[in-house]
Structures are given as structure tokens and as C-alpha cells.
Image (cartoon, rainbow, N blue to C red; front, side, top):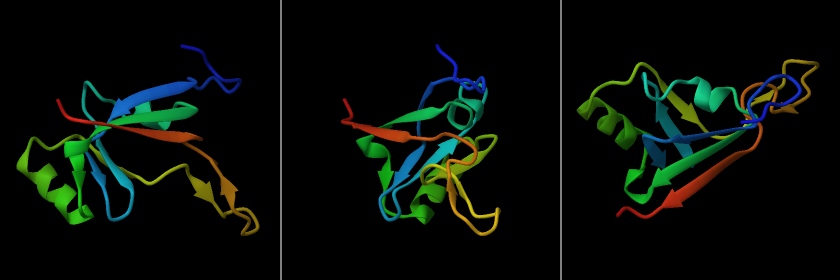
Length: 108
């Protein structure tokens, strides 16, 4: 794996817990096999989501989370970060990943 000039890995590839059709949001849980660093530190984040993981609403995703083993953390990701803290000017990709790609795959 290569690193950027600011010592961030170029690409992180993760799975997802759910994709929310209503908003385009990804719900990603963390745990020992899936630490937060995999989707917050890389310069580029690639998410692989199965078609069956798509739910209609945010509430549907939380219902599924409550049915299983609760992850350490639950992150809702809608795309690269942005900030308007400096003189109310919007800066894209201020922290976290820059580009994010979602790869949808059919279930077997």
C-alpha cells in the first residue's frame, strides 16, 4: 500500500452494514475486524455493498442494527467532508477521505 505526502494510505476498501436508498447514506459499523481507520484515514475510500444491504430508510437500517450484535460504533457516511468554519467559505475534503466510491454487487 502506498501513502500520500501527509502519510495517509492511498486507498481503503471496506464493506458496509447498510446503504440507505432514501438519502444515499452508508451505515458502517466498526469492530475488531473492521476498525474506523479503514474508512476515515485513507485518501480514497472504496465501499463494497451487496444489493441485499440496501434498505429504504435510515430507520430501517437502525432496526437491522438492533436485531444483531451491536458494533462498537456506527458511522453514517454521505460523502467527503466539508467545512465552512473559516470565514464561512466551504472547503471540501477538509478531513477524512477525499473521493469515495461505492461498488454495488449482486448477492450470490
